[in-house]
Image (cartoon, rainbow, N blue to C red):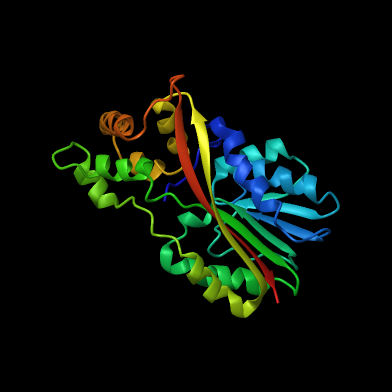
Length: 262
């Protein structure tokens, strides 16, 4: 996982990244929670939705990235934000809604289910745990990433082999349901594929630079990074066709879950 994230890079596609957060929030069955925590709040684009939706709630945010928290404090100066590790995060006091927009994919695979059970277990009866994550490891954008990274003979293959930048597969809907059903009175799970209209293939690179590409490029020297990105772009041009207007449609599937504590 990258040591830190760039808020400015992430926000190059703010509207597209925020839409899933809106869609997740629309399915949260709470009208007036007292305390809401945005887990992995990023630059506060998702936190702003929570503040708008629940104006009478105490809303706070946490993230492991100092750069993201710096930006979040500028966006919402009246909201308390903190730098914290999600794996060990302990809220002070009762929380009615744990909400998370695209962060749990970065938690190591063996720790996800226990963390989900722990978070749901911390809620009072009727409390809600809601999250969405990219479900795109099988997409051409990420297959091309892996192929470019581990092409034999390239100047960066040894560095990335040592770094092992790949993400673990996320739990399936069945695994999520079976793990959380004993603690829940209701579980909603769904998958949505967004089709993002991007200017060109270079824009796909810019998109993933803010998230999924970071573990691949961070270990590389400037020369290795330039060569890797050139190889990756060439592969993207092979797997994504340009539309009639020259733009490129990027399919982007995401997995959503909303669980109500029993």
